[in-house]
Image 1: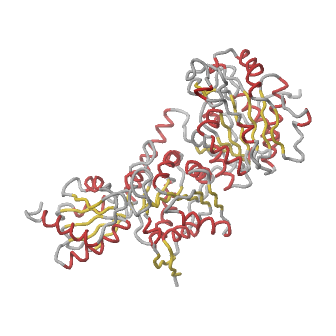
Image 2: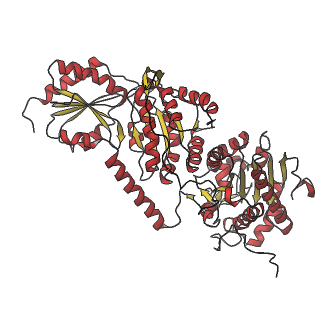
Image 3: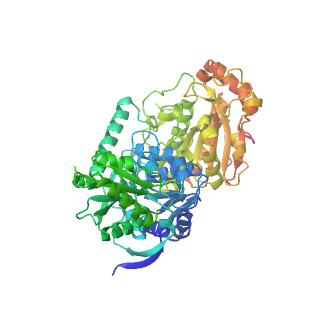
Amino acid sequence: MAERVLMKGNEALGEAAIRAGCLFYYGYPITPQTELLEYMARELPRRGGTFLQTESEVATIYVVYGTAAAGKRVMTSSSSPVISLMAEGISFLAAAQLPAVIVDITRASPGLGRIPPAQSDYRQLTHGAGHGDYHLVVLAPASVQEMADLTFLAFDLADRYRNPVAIMADGILGQMMEPLEWKAWPTDGHPKEWAVTGAGGRPRNLVLNAPYTDQELMDLNRTLKEKYRLIAEAEQRWEYVDMEGAEMAVVAYGTSARIAMEAVEEARRDGIPVGLVRPISLWPFPTRAFRPLMGKLRCYLTVEMNDGQMVEDLELALRCTAPVHSHGQGGGWVPTTAGIREEIERVWRGSSAGPMG
Amino acid sequence: MERVFGRPNGLINLPFPYCPGCGHGTVHRMIAEAIDELGIAERTIMVTSIGCSVRMWRQFGELDVCQPAHGRAPAAATGIKRALPEAVVFAYQGDGDMTAIGTAEVVHAAARGEKMAIFFVNNAVFGATGGQMAPTTLEGQTTTTSPWGRDPRQAGYPIRMSEMLATLEAPVYLARVSIAGAGNLNRAKKATLHALEIQKEGRGFAMVEYLVPCPSGWHMTPIESHRWIESTMTKYYPLGVFRDRLDDGELLHSSGRGAG
């Protein structure tokens, strides 16, 4: 029988990482991710792992870089302002093609902000955060179960594609307790022949960021481009909820998708043919989820705990074939079921006046 | 015929990509010789940094190499050593890299007593970008960003990193050496060997600071550069061993307290 437990989101994520074979965790205290840091500090030393609290997140991301270069599964977690601080290192991880998992339990607002729930880093993670032509794979859990499941997946994707993977969640998902089932995920199954371990008995390995020639630099960037094309093709993930017969869709991920789900159910009961599309991978954006909907749906409503950062990605996915409305606000705003329900009604009435197409 | 001098195994047959009279090649050679002598190439991982030495990984043909960002070598070396406790890990940093953008990383790696050697090459300027002022630039020294000489009222005073790290408990070996003059070269070589021996035995954090010439950055001939190290640089940066916590660590003490 599968093991069933009641756990906090942040701790579920930490436990999933350890079960995924991640025995190296480095971090620095910042609310609202500190429980994860503390969980790893408590658990890793007694389970044969290594926990290190560093002097800054700049150092953290390069300790991660070193351990990833040595071929071990490694994770860090942090929160918005210092994900910015890590951005340099994230770009370096991508350039060196190193697998690592970076958890962002977001804060609200630019600058320091405060710690109410928010999805403020959608744009930062999916369209950045560092310099140059690279992508982070970004996953957005919407339950404690997914905090665990997507952590396993994050390590798998990181190793498979040799690329950093981010998990974006907010304070609600981090703090709330839910039942969770431990599934039999495979642990590290990716041989790392490229790792630097001491060159005894084999040709030496190089984990470099500065290729020697212009040609080598171009080759690296071509490799990266092709890799990101493959990821964008193979790793789009989403969930449809009540999409059968839908003529309108709410699009939301993470905590706001949880709240939107209820509003969608209510609107359906009241006769509005609305469903929910929940992106699980934010990068790659699940464009394929929207392809079969094009020409069938009249309108879309995004619900985000930010000022509408996903709208442009959705408009691109739809090639602007249908209007996209945004229900969102940064700064710690959390949508309510009633508020979303009202927006669904307003958008639906505004769009259903004329014939479709 | 007995071969008494040759290229160390650790270096490939490739000219150093440095300016005439540059100190990097000399320090590279000392490290390669020490690795040969200790027989540790197979389990050694070199962590490079950003600056003129950014491409040094090419010269050391036997070693696994990890190349992180400017100033971050001690953090990446920490990540490698924590993951691979049996490996010998060393980082190579210039003074721009270490004493400016990387100050926090080196101080905390030293404070934690990470088991690594750091070879810190101090030529008192940012060399790769064309001779700008570094935190190590001497008072009055002319660089492209201190064209009228470093003015302490505006730019503060040069940082003595070895002495700073010597205020910490954890480091087991901290020495400053010079590569100007044959006697100094011998002492510098011994310090290099000692720092790597400490790693071979897993004894703790070791750093060797080398005072080296940058004739291009200093606008001097190689010979003038060596004289300047002896006449000026060593006045502000005294040579010596600032920490040697090993019972058997008498390599430099044997020739007196100072290495210079």
